[in-house]
Length: 83
Image 1 (cartoon, rainbow, N blue to C red):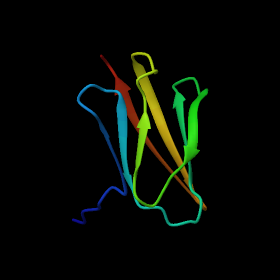
Image 2 (cartoon, rainbow, N blue to C red):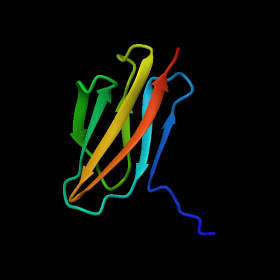
Image 3 (cartoon, rainbow, N blue to C red):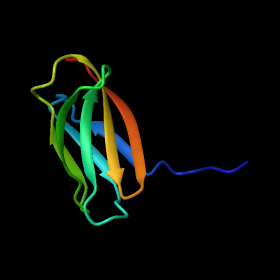
Image 4 (cartoon, rainbow, N blue to C red):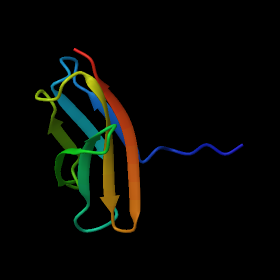
């Protein structure tokens, strides 16, 4: 059986005010979107090569999806805010 390492890892800070994104981009200017489950884009920006910390203190208690568009690849991961 083969094991794969997930190239996109998320971690919420203990106070759930910052989303720490661990991802190593493969293209020059990868973009991110945070969407709600209805597909509305809540936040967007550029992913840096040094990782990414996204302020999420303004998000309400809900499940969200982080999408990363990295060249031809799209990575997605769900996370939940529950304060």
